[in-house]
Length: 356
Image (cartoon, rainbow, N blue to C red; front, side, top):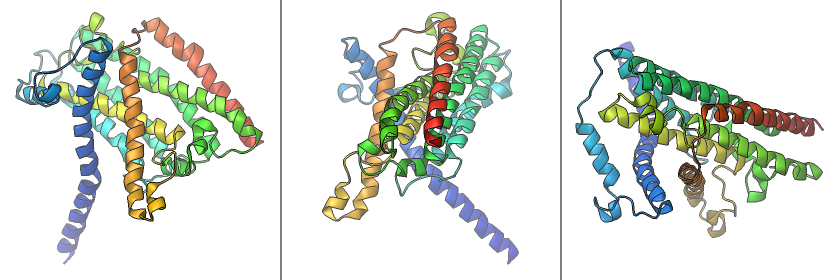
C-alpha cells in the first residue's frame, strides 16, 4: 500500500512538472525560430536587402532548415578541451534562461509560480548564465573563447548593479517582489502603468513620471548588456574574437547558445513589461467585459502581454543593426559613471517620495 501511494505521489509530481514546463517550452521554441527569422528580415530591410528568400515563401522556412542542418552536424569537442565542462556549459546557460520564465505572469490564469520573491528569483537564476559562459570559455581551451568569457562575466556582473538598484526602486514603490502583484497594481488603463507614475496620486505622480522613465531606460540598457546584445556585444565581437565564448562549439550545442540568447531577450522584455507597462493588462480595458464574455479576458491578457514583450524584442533587434559596438572602456564607463549614479539618485528620490 505504501509503495502504491509513493508511486502515485511520484507520478503526480512528474505530471505537475510536465504540465508546468511543456506549454512554456512549446512557446519558446517556436518563438526562437520566428525571432531568428525576424531578426534576419529586420536587418535586411534596414540595409535595403531582402534577407532569406529561397527556403519557403519569402524564406519563412529558412530557420527550420538551419536547425535541421545543425542537428545533423558533427559534434566536435577539441582535443585539449575539458570535455565535462565543455559539454555542461550550454546546458547550464539554457536551463538558467528557461527557468527565469517560471515567475513571469503571462495572464491572470497562467503563471508558473506566483512566488512572493519573484523578482529576486529571476535575478538570482539568471546569474547562472555567467557561470555557464565562464565554463564554456575556459573549457574550450581557446584564447578567443576565454577572452570572450572573461569580458562577458565582467560585463554582466557590472550591469547587474544598476538592474538590481532599479528593481529595488520598484519594490519600494510597489511594496512587493511578486510580479503578479506588481502587474495587478497597474490594472484598468495605461495611465496607471508604472512608467506613468503608477497608482500614485496628486503632485507625486507628476514627480514620478520622469523618474520612472529614467528607471526604465536604465534597466533596459542594463539588461541589453546582460544578454550581450549590441552595442554591448563585446563578449562575441566577431571582428575581434571570431565568435567569443562559443567559438569552439558546433551542432546543437552551438544552437543552444543562440536559443538561450533569444530566450533571454524575451525574458527581459517580459520583466520590463511587468514592471513598467502594465504586464498582461490591456491599456484600453477588456473586450470580454464589454461583451459580457469573461472567458475571453485571459486570452486578451496573453495577447497583450506577448505583444508588449515582442515589441521590446523587435526594439532590441533594431538597436543591434543601428548602433556601433562599444569599446571595453566605454562599456564600463557607461555602467560605473552614468547608470549606477543615476539609478542611486532615482532610488533615493523615489524612497523620499514613498516616505512622504
